[in-house]
Image (tube, rainbow, N blue to C red; front, side):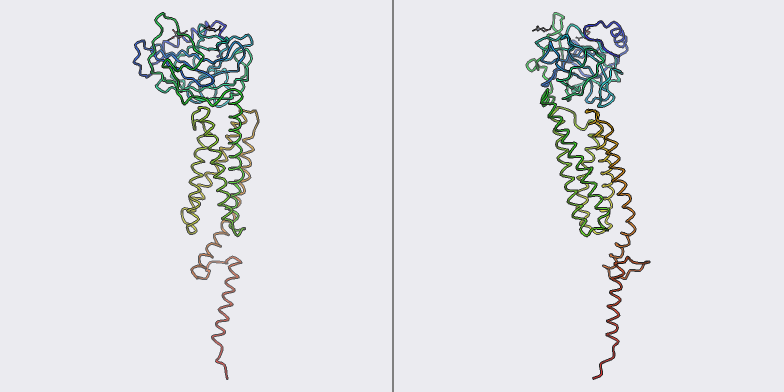
Length: 448
Ligand SMILES: *[C@@H]1O[C@H](CO)[C@@H](O)[C@H](O)[C@H]1NC(C)=O
Ligand SMILES: *[C@@H]1O[C@H](CO)[C@@H](O)[C@H](O)[C@H]1NC(C)=O
């Protein structure tokens, strides 16, 4: 359902919203407000969000403001919850005629929100919606539905996003270009609110309100706006992508394959394996640091999507794997640590390749490139995975060599079937040596 522009009339949505009102449930925000109303405002350098929560009506009246207006200024959005998926969003922009436009949307994930709305309809509040040289305010009233990702509390999270450069068309269902900056704002919806005595709504401020007790969460500030924020975010994500691709699609697979094939084909496979994996760890730490910084800088929630969660797991596993590898190297062959090292390695690699694919999917959603995750998975699972599995065919041969070596160490002759060629040579050599000794012993005393 599309919320019409602030200029149009909303008979139908008003009736729908009113019917929803009567069935709305109670929400457990503790308010000591005589009016039964609570409110808070939070700002960052891009926008402010004010929310007035009416517990008895189970509605929230929102006002989103920014400091420019009267002309096209890109788009601004807030949504319930701390992530895009399932969020009930309101996107505002200014039309070519200089008037505010609002569009209520939901997104099924980190992709372009559509106007196919699952949340209950919001009603624009025309009296508080304007755009002029003072700034722009988009105001609307929404029921608090039990299905939305919103539950008013002392820390009620709202995502926000902006693209100050891209102006959607005048139609509320127009396509929206991707955000250049985004994050999470936290509002304390337990703060008491007393409406002005004259019954009129308070004036709408378009600048961060810090003096009237309605300050926003300081952690919600953004790293920048417009071009600056955009290119900075872009560069950080690109750096993360490059470091992680190098780490998990180039260096780590080579090191793993050296671990698999090297022990039968290379003399000094272990230093190569260890040093390359050390490189993987360094690349992964840099890639991890870059993206954590980017999220922190943008005021976003950490590890709040699948890619980020899997990434955190891979990062922890990679550090653990380094410790296992180094301690395992100090143990004897077949020590459980070595076996755990191999198992954790396989799990880490599989998760890492899967997650690089997920990362490329996010990237392609945001930049319109196609199908790159299948290339990643094809190379990662198909090529590297395939080579590794093929390398397992070397295991029986390796086991024989190892057994032979172990027994050699204990000074026992090799007893099972045919020992490997190199060992046969050694055996032959020893036999020859023994024969010579025997010969020497059995030689008759010299006749002088
Ligand atoms: C919220 O907005 C609705 C619709 O404009 C209005 O009737 C109601 O009084 C507002 N509530 C508050 C607390 O401002
Ligand atoms: C812009 O509109 C708001 C709300 O209608 C009003 O309070 C403000 O004075 C206006 N500013 C200018 C410069 O017209």
